[in-house]
Structure formats: structure tokens, C-alpha cells
Length: 60
Image (cartoon, rainbow, N blue to C red):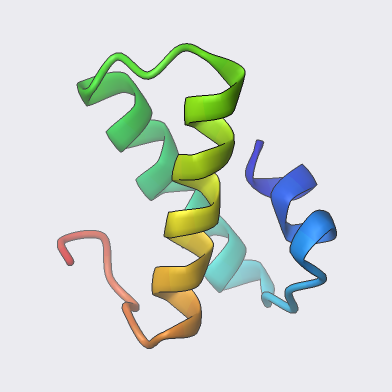
């Protein structure tokens, strides 16, 4: 989901940033039991936007 959203938003993430976004996405989607495609896409967008705005660790 993160990878397809990165392509859709034309975001540039290095390998470490991508891995962080994927970990955060996986954790939040599991913890909040997010299962619908629309909700997962929204979460992916928020995770990527947070990364672009400077959030750079898993605990943020």
C-alpha cells in the first residue's frame, strides 16, 4: 500500500524513509484494525505526508 501511494503522490523517499513509512503503516493499520482499501489509502497518505513534514522515527 505504501509503495503504490508513493507512486501516486510522486513522492521521493530513500530506502530508509520508505522502510520507516512501511513499518508505521503496518503497525497503525494492525493496531487500529484498518481493513478497507479506502481507509488504508488514507492512512498511507497520512504516513507519507508526516514523513515529508519531518517525522522521522517510529515513535512519533
